[in-house]
Image (cartoon, rainbow, N blue to C red; front, side, top):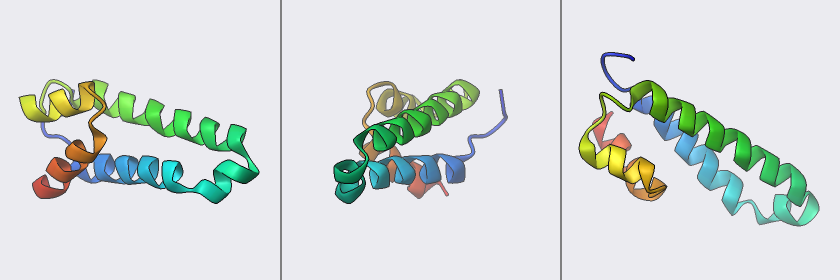
Amino acid sequence: MSASPDYKTLVSLLEERLSTIADTAWRDRDPEGQLAALGDVSTRIDAWKIEYGGVVSPQMAHFLDGASYGKALAVAKAAI
C-alpha cells in the first residue's frame, strides 16, 4: 500500500474508461474490441483501488466501490 493516492493515474484511467464508452464509432465497427478495452481499463481501475484503497477518503472509496466513476473523477481532479 502506498502512502498517498496517485490521483493523476486514477484520472487518466477514469477518463480512458469514459472515452472508451463514448466511442460509438468503435462500438459500431468492433463491439468485441471495445468491450475488451473496457474490461482492460476496468481491471486497471480495480488494481488502483486495491493499491490505494486503504489511503483514499471514505467518499472516494464509496464512489469507486459503487462504480460512481464520474463522481470519483471529479474528486480525483480536485485532489491533484
